[in-house]
Length: 102
Image 1 (tube, rainbow, N blue to C red):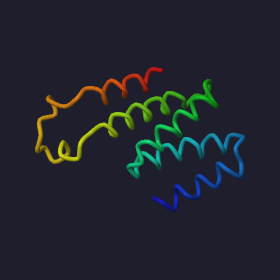
Image 2 (image 1 turned 30 degrees about the horizontal axis):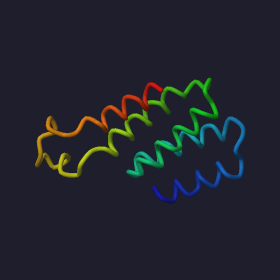
Image 3 (image 1 turned 90 degrees about the vertical axis):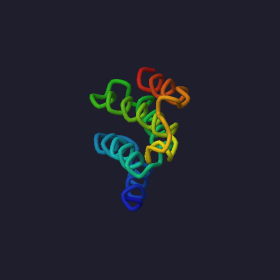
Image 4 (image 1 turned 90 degrees about the horizontal axis):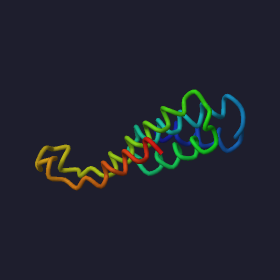
């Protein structure tokens, strides 16, 4: 996946405009998310939303931005089910909701 990220970043840098650039930006959001780079995914999604507010895939960018905010706020122990998720701070969930609607 790091190779895909490097190539998508290079494509976005060299050809920042056009239909292929927009697709590369969407793919970059996905690659960051799948690689666990939550903050990079949020930043890339925010950039896409700012640059292309009327794009047909802008809803996907909002979705991944909110999902990345939620993932960034999770603890590693939650994944192992060693702590009760109902007792966690809801701040990350609130941030995720705000990222997905604003």
